[in-house]
Length: 169
Ligand SMILES: Nc1nc2c(ncn2[C@@H]2O[C@H](COP(=O)(O)OP(=O)(O)OP(=O)(O)O)[C@@H](O)[C@H]2O)c(=O)[nH]1
Ligand SMILES: [Mg+2]
Image 1 (cartoon, rainbow, N blue to C red):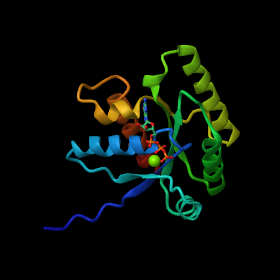
Image 2: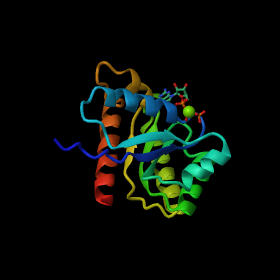
Image 3: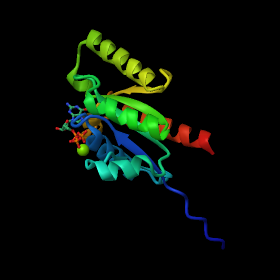
């Protein structure tokens, strides 16, 4: 029997301002994948905290990046900084996660931050067509009950990444 070739594992960077929910997203995602028999051909990597490692990650082999943005605060300093570094290195942005939806009930505030996110994407030449997912990484991590903002976020994100990687082949 022929041994299947080892699948290439693509690295997808998870970036965004401190405290916006990168680690929470990754652990929720990994937990979700743990329930699936098919292992994905990609892994999520958090943006390294020290600038030397960040430099080599950004300029290394990345399939793309997910930008996490807290919807309660909107884009902040590192949101901008990480986008700029990606733009300079030519890293494609696969999707934006507007996170912590569970904290913001106000629809006007949600819409305002969505518009800010679209504006910042355009500012760094990432099209406003970049998929934007609204959700709660926190709920996704502990949802036994398939809450609206939690599990939907993970399946949408998984779908966007898979679709993106397939289009790169
Ligand atoms: N309410 C709420 N809290 C969240 C959500 N996602 C993350 N948090 C909380 O936000 C805080 C920061 O989350 P992290 O995942 O550590 O954020 P991070 O972006 O990895 O932060 P750094 O590694 O310091 O850059 C923690 O207290 C999380 O529990 C969410 O969707 N909703
Ligand atoms: Mg973290």
